[in-house]
Image (cartoon, rainbow, N blue to C red; front, top):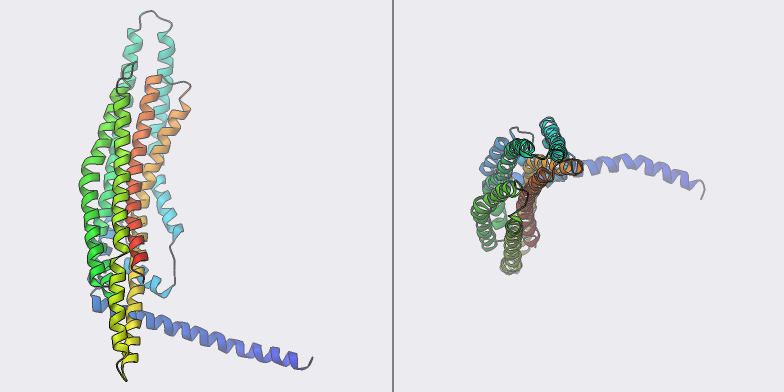
Length: 389
């Protein structure tokens, strides 16, 4: 027994390289078969034009060709890569680094304004005549208002740009994505989800871009006016505006996702039942039925894989495009909150309230943009989950 065991180990070691080679060859053949099936499906569904349109939008928005949509879809089909969170994080940090030098200047000015306002407030208590101190305060307030207004306009434009990115990318992603859904799940399911997505795009374009974002601009102006006098007079109006903005965004988010979820519980199962009846009817045909049904099921599974790959690539494309502007918005929101916290003990109360209001407004812009991104990401995710049956 002791002499047999070493021979067994030697034979196993001799056979192991052949097993590794066979596994590698099998994996290569499987990869080639996957590429062939994917190429045939692309040609059948005419997805090359859709890929070109998606890539054109990606390159025009990002300003580079660092993310290849078609290559990413093929890599997902082969199972070569997963989501590159490192690349996404790098893109997010690039958006912050791009604003660091500009943010330093704003931080220095805000800190200097807060210190100067504190000095004026202290001097005003020494002299009986406060006209000079009041004049100095209004000059500082106008300077602060001008700097905060310029930064807020940039942030509001950035939030608007995020929604334009989402709408522009989704408009070119939808034809390829829902064409793959129609092939592997059914035309009825694809039509219903496509119609829901068009409604979602219309709601975002009309309601958020033309109502919510202008309301945030009004909130900022009212906040600046609210703190210019010693006695605030727009407190309840500002609270009402903030509540209306946040609750409206939540209502839109919940209603649109609910519609998507309800439709996802009905249409895909109806198409799956009809497809199952057809496959079983073909399967009972003597002779060729079993083979034809097996080939049809394999093609449908390949189409399902292609659909999931396009959906996952679309999710990563949204994250890739929006990481840079979201990084900028997070940086400025943190900058304003940090400045308010640092100057709380030295700045004049009204100027401090002005900076705090600007921080809240930047937070509202970030809140709106993040909800918009999350809405489209969850919509694609719900579609992926409900059509994978």
